[in-house]
Amino acid sequence: MQIEAILKSYARYAPVYDHTFGWLLSFRGRSLAAGLTNKQPGKILEVGVGTGISLSFYRREHQVHGIDISPHMLERAHRRVRTKRLGHVTQLEIMDARKLHYPDEHFDAVVAAYVMSVVPEPEKVIKEIERVCKPGGDVIIVNHFVAERGFRRRFESMLAPLSSKLGWRPDMALQEILAHTSLHEVERRSLPPLGLFTMLHLRKGQ
Image (tube, rainbow, N blue to C red; front, side, top):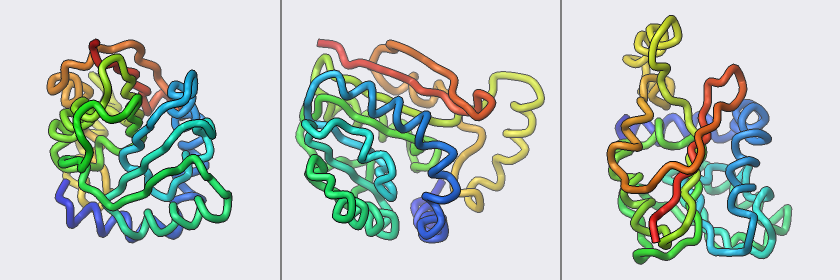
């Protein structure tokens, strides 16, 4: 995925995102991801915050920072924060997830929901996420990963050449994340619809 294709896709999706992808994905994957950070208050980074559809799932004692590459998406996220009075949202900023403008070990938890198969160079993104996460902190990734075998694997491979038009990579393998990080896996859970998505809960060593 090239950054230009991503920006074009998000400019296209932004006006309708909440009413299409939002209702399908948010109340299971996004709420579960945010819920894992809610055990105690802390400083949270959401990578690929989009229209801010998940911001209300975080506990109000948090300090939530959100980044996204798309100004069209962030415009709607800012609007949501104002209208819903989400005072726990500290910052929303345009930023490339491959080069986060935060110091090392800055966040108690990092959430990246439905973003890893969209960004270019996901191996750089997971390394940056690991860098800014505090030791002992949680990293929660929700994403679609290619099936290991069978009809679904063949179908997703057939869709791969259309990635730029779709705005995401249907053939991204889970190992593209795990092979480029020293974060250790805490939990892996299949999510609806039909187990097409996975929640991956990782933790940084002390």
